[in-house]
Image (cartoon, rainbow, N blue to C red; front, side, top):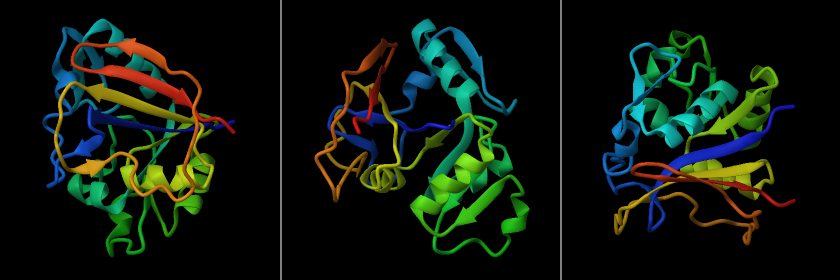
Length: 194
């Protein structure tokens, strides 16, 4: 059965991007080592340390679908219909693009619950990954998230886009983390308590 997890690189003060949406300060760990981890798209690979490589391989191998919001989809041009995890993408948006057929491996849905349900359908029993802070927040509030993953980067941004802001049904509680120490990031996995 598909499990749902979130994964974001985050600053020590809780931001997943700077105020303009930039992630340069947070994504350096993807190129901080000497172990190559290829993505499902030959255009991209990661150069990480051995510990981060093990974590990334697990994320890539287990991914069956990715859920994101329209902003990230637009910023990446839908990854040209080939996300690096190699799985179909579900975009949560109230305004699907007119040329939606341009992305045949991408579905556009109107709400978070519908997005998670659709992602589970296409995941083929593999995991569903949420790659959007706002979608992750809403899914957590709806009780749809099984695990929260954070790649904690040693930088303070001071302001920006927070990982979890304005939670409606907080507090949310988690089990103790599984910790993987990488170069440039500490990877934390928290099971959501039900």
